[in-house]
Length: 224
Image (cartoon, rainbow, N blue to C red):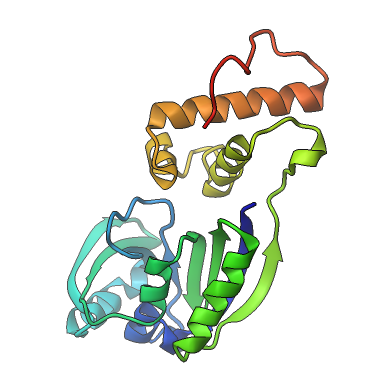
């Protein structure tokens, strides 16, 4: 069963934090839920007032192959970074793990990562891998998903994971913070398949919590 954990790690042990010297006060927020393909954590927001300094620091770093400004508002600027092959440490460990970064930000001496792991034991493996690499992670929070099979909602594991992931990503927020396609890519399925999984899960959840029987059967469709 997937589990969510929050880790803190010193800024100088994380490539982006080290490059930007976050400990001096620049607040950086990773843009989660944007598909990264083979790239690791390439998107992040910084205060627009600090954008020029951030751009200069990134371009001067040997750890960065390319940097682009993708969007800018009065308050925040969105950067994309292509890391060089020299980057290792935490970036490498995150890339190799099966965890999904739900949110992350750096300000001051530390970075905070909120991550979803496929199984609870994966948290221990991630922590130990960090320690073996000479990093100093601190586990600050751990919790299981909101819905369990024994709650009586009748959700399958796939439906529950889809609902929790969509909720955490801000899919139900107004305005939405992610899309079906972005969510579906995390599960390696089509956006249509993810939409159906989400709809069936919502139907079961609502019918269980509101005491109403669904008018259309949700069992007729296979949910892998």
